[in-house]
Length: 277
Image (cartoon, rainbow, N blue to C red; front, side, top):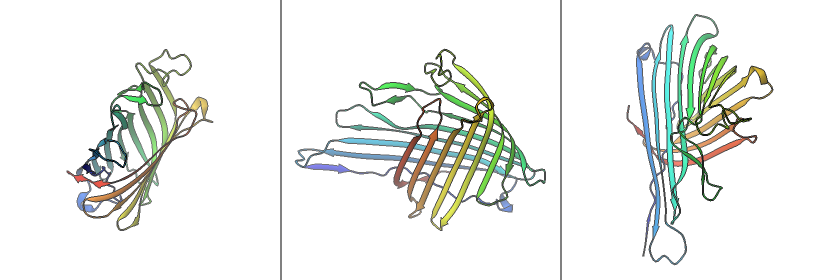
């Protein structure tokens, strides 16, 4: 006899962002999308092979924006955390990310508008290198943590593209894993960097039910302008029904301090989302 249960994987909802309707301008608009995914399979006396497995993922995407004149405020918190286990093996972390961003824009009537932003990037929990046996812990919550403040100008005259460029101040905070803050000596827990940051958000409606969302970030220190940190996040979401969405993500990261190689994360998910706000 066999028992097989396959449940949905979470997906992130996406929407096309254009100009806010007049009825919503100068008002605070909250939104909260949550998802939970479970993938489980179990066997009893199953002669064709296989092994028991379970995987689950939690996701949250909270936004609190105010589009107005002359001030615009955009706030977002995105978090995801997932684990999996095969047979008698240990649970392994499969997703572990926390991203917070706050942007304030003041419209002065120019083609570009001045802005201030603050972003935080870290892990939700501990991260491990599973290529080693036993697994080796290599990260934890805010170890490392990246905080970036930027002041500059933003351009948002195109409906589907918003880009900003400015002077960036980045703090790298660590505790046990000082290879991220002090790769040469691994002594200092804190590193402060000054440089240039560019962030571009793309929101493009391919079809009525298919949306592409992209976020491109570049950062370089003034002392090493020949080396750039790059983060390119691509997501294509196809809305099948009111509550079922197919979601494909392709994330590319290059940060020389973290790794001399380009990091790639790819995911294809089908599942259910919950719009709580």
